[in-house]
Amino acid sequence: MNWTQVVHSGNIDDLYELFQQDPYLLEQIDEVPFIDTPLHIAAAAGQVDFVVEMMNLKPSFATKLNPDGFTPMHIALHNHRDQLLFELLKINQELVLVKVKKGMTLLHYAAEQAERSKLEALQLLGRWLRRTYNKDGGLWELHVLNWKDKEGNPVFHIATSNIHNQVEV
Image (cartoon, rainbow, N blue to C red; front, side):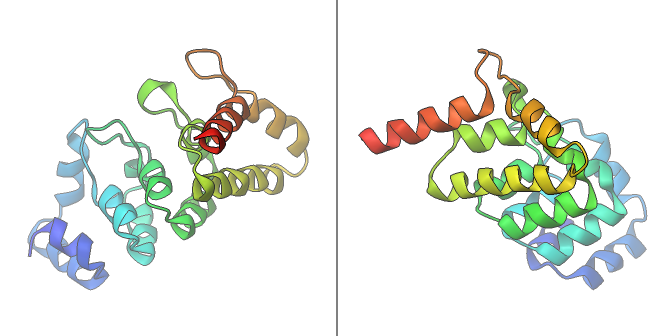
């Protein structure tokens, strides 16, 4: 089996068998500047346990962009993998701040894509901000939610605009 087959299967034991054959496998993947890493593929496939294992083995994959310019978090959001978002944020809360293609953070991406399920994910991220940054939560949340995209639009302006447009259609 190759590594993409192992990732799709979600079998962690098979992953370690690959390491016996090639202990530098993850380093070779990490050398490629833009690639769908095992973390990207596992996020798309909804392999929660595999994602957690991969985060422990190679945390740098979480901020790596694929050829489309997205991180595993963006892929998880796009594929409605809310449990994966929770797990990734439990491991590294700063992932919500990573900027991807067009300078978008995960919140910008969620707002731009704001279908009903993605709106729920956006609300979930807002609740996460409140809970995670409890001491200064209000200030932090206000700061993050007022981040602007390259056109100068804050996150919730984008979200409400997209929701309004969907209601009109």
